[in-house]
Image (cartoon, rainbow, N blue to C red; front, side, top):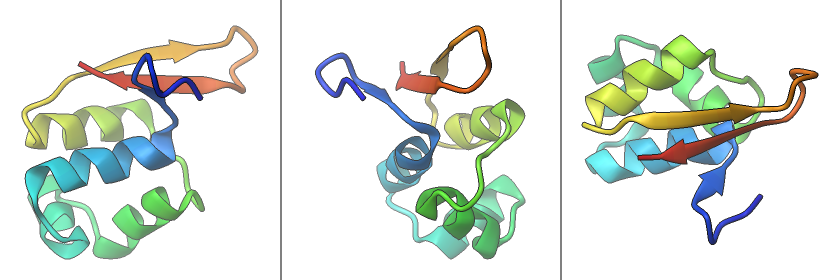
Length: 81
């Protein structure tokens, strides 16, 4: 993870997006039309959000994301724009 370039994994991305809104997990989940437990699973790394879910969360925070993935589909990095 290259923090200097602002590149982060999906676990940290979800938390960063939520914290930028100033909302608690329950409030952010409601705003995104997700369950609080789903947001908690994303933030803990126990579940990986789909790209569509990341886009919805970013939109709720008035952000966009830039996605970079390796060709084998295993390594994913995200950058807040």
